[in-house]
Length: 141
Image (tube, rainbow, N blue to C red; front, side):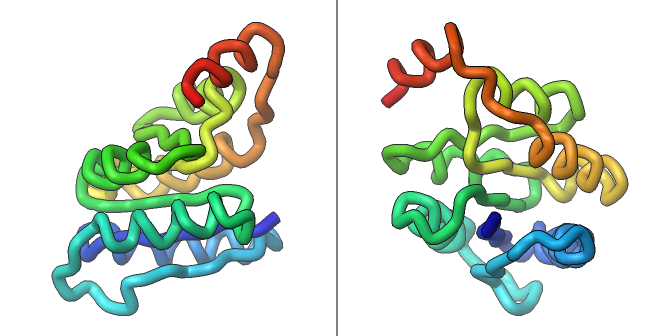
């Protein structure tokens, strides 16, 4: 499975922590930037990750900014993207099971590294349940 990841300057450090963690688990990660913690505009990086998903290059995406809000707003403007801003493990699980989210948004200034990694692992391990949830997800499209 290929996972696209990007951040802005606020999420730069956490992005690298997550990349290292996922690569150690054998995931194929594509880093869409930025390449430093210099100030950048989060919509530019959100668009790179969402394009990778909508073009079927990546199956899932992870976006990180200071709060996660800007990335989630920008990502959800793209048809076919179901981005979820997550700051707890339960929501990470349920957003995949019930909403079939394909982009995980995290706030680096809101959660610590350990919680972020637990959220990422939980989100990746959860599977869409379909059924009544599929009907609802279809209505989003």
